[in-house]
Amino acid sequence: MTPVVFGPNGSQLMGIYHAAEPELALGVGVVLCNPLGYEAMCAHRTYRHLARRLAAAGFDVLRFDYQGTGDSSGRSDEPDRVRAWLDSIGAAVDELRLIAGVTSIDLFGVRLGATLAALAAGERRDIRALVLWAPAVSGRAYVREHRALQLLRPGSGPAAQVGQDAGDLLEPTLRELSTTSLLALRDRFVERALVLPRDDLPTVEEQLALHLRGCGVETELRAEPGYARMMDHPETAVVPSPTLDTIVAWLRRPATVIPRRPVVGPGPRAVLAAWSHAPRHAVREEALSFGAGHRLFGILTEAEEPRGGRTAVVFLNAGANHRVGPNRLYVSLARDLAARGYPAFRFDAGGLGDGGPTPGMAENRIYSKDSVADVKAAMTFLTSIRGMERFVLVGICSGGFLAFHASSEDTRVAAQIVINPQTFEWKQGDPIELSTRKSYKSTRYYLRALCRPSVWTLALRGELDVRGVVGAVRKRSASRAAVRLRGVMARWRGLPEPRNEVERTLRAVSARGVRSLLVFSANDGGLDMIEQHLGGGASSMDGEGNFRLEIVDGADHTFTQKGAQDRLRTLITRFVDASASSAMDGRGRRIGTLCAPSGRRDA
Image 1 (cartoon, rainbow, N blue to C red):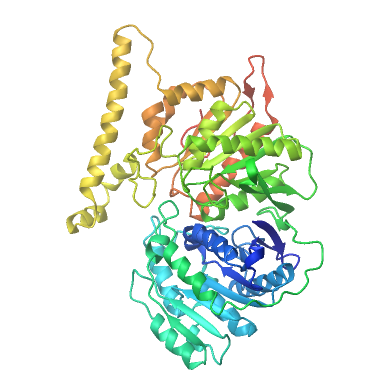
Image 2 (cartoon, one colour):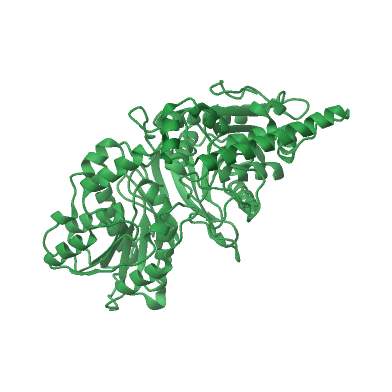
């Protein structure tokens, strides 16, 4: 993997180049065009596997993020998104020709990535072949589907706003998309096309294949398995290996070697110019490989004019999402913090995103203490290249789990920001639902829901998993009762109340001077977990000046809504400011104001 930055100043794009196996090089390049939003998160691992297979088969491959998405510059709320995405594909085609010396280019895409690939090929007329997997043939139909899915989100409705930098599709963009149609393409704009229907819903790909044949394009329609499982969820997504083999074999026909042009120039560069969220300040981002065998990968964000501080912020994978974080949240936070003078490093632990797994380990292993070693490797790496001495760890869900355990083991950690973890004590095989679509919400959410007539209506219709909810609440209540009983028995015997491992760990790091900010969405099931360990409102941590619990109303598990993102952004930036500037008192504990109260608890 070679990181590449390309495109015009002000709209630079981040990509990863996979060079062809030299002995098998065909002189043909393949540009992989991402889907958008949540679908891009689900498909990320499949795209990486496809790129590696294509390179091993002799293709030069470039996968990249469109302007305003992923690691690239820009924001999702800028105007003319469809035009920007098509221009991004054009820039990727030109870049691959430049760095690999190839003259023939093919395009691959899934869902909206397939749609954009076909539209870009129709404009350029210099693309050899297309592979379109589950393309959105009609932009209008795609927009209808997207809006229907939005309405199914918790807290959806007219008042709910998706985050400006969420990487989701905003209304102006949806209106642009609704005017597109692959059936409007004319003439023989590519030589060949492979169309793969989705395997979970009725589709119109047969109509598209007939249309392409009518344009003179040699078109093959093949029903292959794997789409639904590939797009299920980042944590449970299955790479559709047989279908990837089919795609590689189809692109290799005919396997004619095309002479390359000589490659001239200094080679790919990997430093991107971007801007912070608010206020708008210039930042620079560098893609870096590190660790044993350079198997780990991350993006370091810094101010254009570094301030010479020694505190860096490290973002840890949220579930199986790659380094951009859910809703692209890590990207915007990293750029904001860098503008405030804090270098920010968002990286992929082994087996996640673009992080290579430890030899012998499986991919997509989350809630694994083995990844703590990767967190330590990231801190060591930042010390070696930038002299960083103190680190603030930030993680959502399983990233919070990693922050908790790394903070307890490594004295270089000055502070941790732990957001909506589902557990702190997990081992392989434990029956925990890590998918937020399948996990149960907090008990307080269900207690409030009892007062809403609509909930009773759903229950009577059988549209609510009443048995599952009751079981989850009963289990949580039993766990809390057991904790209270142990406390009562200890007091009755004149003994100090027993402390569980989570409380002991938090007290130990607090005594060492580590600041801890735990943030939970009011409806998140993880809130019951932390209150089981620390009591209601984390009451057992009263008096610990280095500990704070914040409960944010109106937020889902990954802070999708704009208002929730703004509150989280404020909490994090103020906490990092306070952690970086705090003094040391005589007992070795950091002192200073954490951040202004904005939630339920200020410990």
